[in-house]
Length: 461
Length: 164
Image (cartoon, rainbow over all chains, first blue to last red):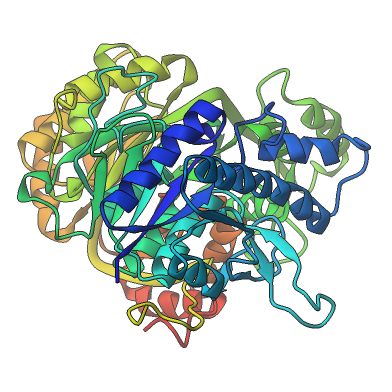
């Protein structure tokens, strides 16, 4: 029995007839090599293209801007993009003499939970795919979608979508369910690059990359394959490849940690960038009361659904970043916030009122609320908590496996950026990377300089 | 087709916090850094000196008037000497433990930090430093509070039966 290969083609690989034919040739090449391809496709094109996921979402959102569409109906709408793409790809293959059959996520046996918009795959029953393969047909499966379990209020199951990275996740899930020989993610670059090629034209393509490196690279901004998909491939030991639809480059092979060539261990893998953020630094001088004030900040942000990252604190400060689209909500919540604190945690009433104050222009609520506290100042100490805001920041990361056992990576980063006058606003490190928050205006320069400083231009390993 | 499973397979990982890990034997160093024009030169000297002394550092944070980082206890003396060699002064706090709260894509999960801080507070642990990456939140606490903090965190995140 020939081995199955799952081939996933993203939106830019199926956005026009010429590209779909190139994709079809990859499928034909796999068949000629004696493999049995199972194809997964994304919706056609990106926002603005008539059947792209974002276009379909905009269509429902545009019905009444004051009304938020139900997630269930939104999933029905968004699933149309992959259905159209699947039918178009199947017919493209048929027109080139390749027997093919289009299958929706549900028809392919992908069962999910009921988290509309970001459903999690619970299982795959791939009978329809196996039947097609048995008939020597190429199953062309909708990525990004599944159905809920049949029963209750959904006797035939509800259509769901998988959220970000959904089509990659579909490909890996099918790879696991079908015991595929490999999963190939086709995109518009040759493989996993050492940096964003739009910023660093001479960024190299890695021949081999470990799963931990891939997780780090993808979580920190590179969009070659979604980490959810990589997790499934790693957990099930399925070889994963990242390749280009538009070239014959062999691509990047993703291997388990420990299976990589020794030359690639403890290396700097690449430079990534991610996020558009705003950084807050709040000065809290009373060390005894600081933990309670910090706790109130965390609670406030948590209740408002605002994710904080790059959290850090010193003896007299708390700082953190939030995504820029949440900046005004975060600032509105913090400006003028009053935290009452007793002289000890169980003591009532409060002995101190801490009121948050940002720089002039950002202190509207503070300016309104501060005078209201004057009457209590004779028996409660009112303390200003000054805050600073760094707008327009972003994160540049050096992915370096084993850096915690390799002294000098931080020194090299600091030296490189400092020499160019690029300020590092904050740092975050994991076992695999060091990330620096820098002004967005310096991003491209920072990526290029670090790429050069770590000698990545010629990397091919 | 006998090599291909015919039945139902389930596999995508659970979302949310997946594990609590304690790493004892950590020290935290605070290095005073001026906030004037010499700030970047001081930071440059600090990191260079630590690199030359071959001291691995982590949980690196920059503050308005200081820089902080963590080292393994075995490296404290070398780290303090390297800071001195850079013409700076370090205050070290030893006997700490790094508590890592693991969750895939944790920066997209709302409320993990507040739950973690609340749990540590309830366990009576003081937080001396914190850091985050895409896959974990790290909190530096007293080593003596590590076990009860881990137990409280496991209860908070529903990991009592799955995480030892």
